[in-house]
Amino acid sequence: MQNVNIWSEEFGAETDAPILLIMGSMSQGILWPDEFVGRLTAGDRRVIRYDHRDTGMSGTVDFEAEPYTWDDIKNDVYRVMDAHGLESAHLVCHSAGGLLGQFVAVERPERVRSLTVIGSSPLGGGEGQVIMRALMGQPQPEGSLPEPAPEFVAFYRTLMAAPPPADRRARIDGMIAEQRLLHGTGLPFDEDAARRLQERIYDRARDLSAAANHRLAAMAKPDFEPVGVLHQVKAPTLVIEGSHEPAKPGHSAIIAEQIPGARLMIVAGMGHTLPPEVHEELAAAILAHTAE
Image (cartoon, rainbow, N blue to C red; front, side, top):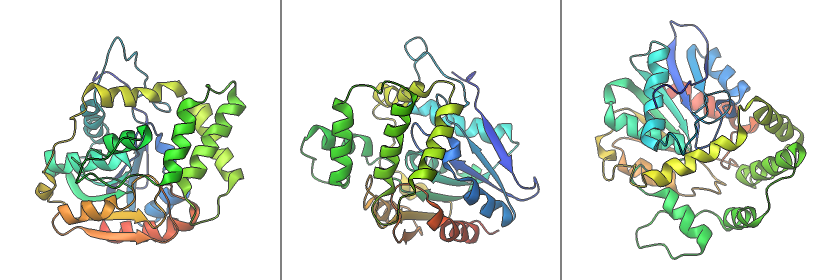
């Protein structure tokens, strides 16, 4: 599977400290907003973002013929770094991208200058199983991570039972509804901006449906995440969560407890997305954290 093409782009001067942005499951790299990227480059950082395999402009896979696991998605992180000539970088990760960043920080500590995880879950916590049990109405075993918010569970239960969208407009309307849910209730939701973003996501995807292969990859190897290893993380770590996180509420505090010396930051009003209102605060925190 190492022949899958990965789309990436970089901003800033090659001599600046590198930041690799790792987005979450089934998500294109452009979900790192242009304005946020611009704030990082204005702070003298070389910033790289990329589309995971089976998303955006990266290569798509016939999963039945050539299955892969989240180990392969994780190893794509190294491939992107190598392609940009980076022996090491500051990793800034969102959602399931945070699992990848934590795994890389454990597996190849010499390649991680610092780690920032936003709206993520602790490596080894089985957050995918927690979400699935919540959607299926199954009890959570003792010691499980906190469940998603009730509105998250209700939205995806409805989505799972709904027929597929009939056309482009219906698909984009559904994508906007999902963004509204993940945005949370702490800040105003800009529907016009959401439509522009989701239209861009739709139109630049080689095959929008291929992103579902990430779910198949998770099922192909459910025990992808090593357990009980976060104490091995050596990189300075910043853990960020929105005060209105609907998908993984309270997970960031658990990450911060398990990684030695990690700092926890709560962003007022933020949910599980990166709206303009939080760009300045997030960028300032990341620039400070990545200062060398």
